[in-house]
Image (cartoon, rainbow, N blue to C red; front, side, top):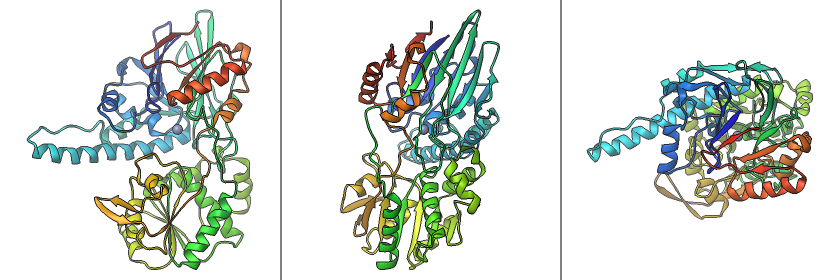
Length: 467
Ligand SMILES: [Zn+2]
């Protein structure tokens, strides 16, 4: 079997690796979108670098757009095989791929208005809502730890990686004549003490491992008192200042963690009597999926559910759907908590809430996750006193707070723990992907010191023959 490394090599995003067996079958691991701006990434997303009609199947590690987001384009360009993933991943993909298609259509709408003014012909989106809908027909959900046969040569099994709901490592067995090769693709690896999800599972002994390395050079800083800090901020904002607390949060994961923390406080009668709103249709859908897929939740949540069947709902919490209800929050002078996407505050409804509430000192903005440089969330955390939203400048008088809570990615200690189920002497090679160059190089050095015999950092387009 050969591996052709295509995506998540030069860049962190765009996860995509092609397996080619001796019998000539081609199977793709992930088909992610390159994220961020730039002509080069746009071209990579369009071109795919594979022959879609020659690919028999895609095995998808998880639903994040940098792993799944180019599937509609693959189908549009002639892929006609099966897309294997866990049931929870399929449910999240239904929401995220449609959302991604809407974004592509809207981006092109805006661009084409400008092109029309310049007398240029219109351009088409990378894929449309109809393309995304079409791609969903190719999905084949498979349970964790169940053997699944792709063809006479290839079979695989998913094991949980605790990164997001439904996330999995792909453990492949390839039988070519009398040769058997075992390859594990880590996908993205989560944390060992996630508030909601199970810890990454052990996986079968592999000959080769394709391993992510996003935080291969870092240990996470964690606010161990995150929940008491959250309660303090709620009390200070909503009771003492009588203001609004705006919390930008990722739709999937962080929103449910915050809601669960508030749910616990409510049950302990610690929470003041204020209204709480989750204002993001994507967050509401993501919460539904979390409620449905209890098989992905950890033992402590299962114990909690025995006493409170809904860890993501209580009487003072409202999930807002319509834009009208969202707008009505602006006119309401009552103190309240608004949890809204996106987490970096660079898109989504949270931008409206920030625009309406940043200038008043009685309000607070609480940043709860990583914010990339250049995003509104990053500028607020950095203490900028005037920020631009929808083309206008707003003075920041509200308090800005942040809680360093759990990242969805393992740090280097946790990546090492993930690999610790393996007999190092039996691992013939590890390929590091999905990390910045420094992270990959640093993690490679760590693994070599640890006793792994061969660790490689494949470049884009590199083909490796697994002996
Ligand atoms: Zn991910």
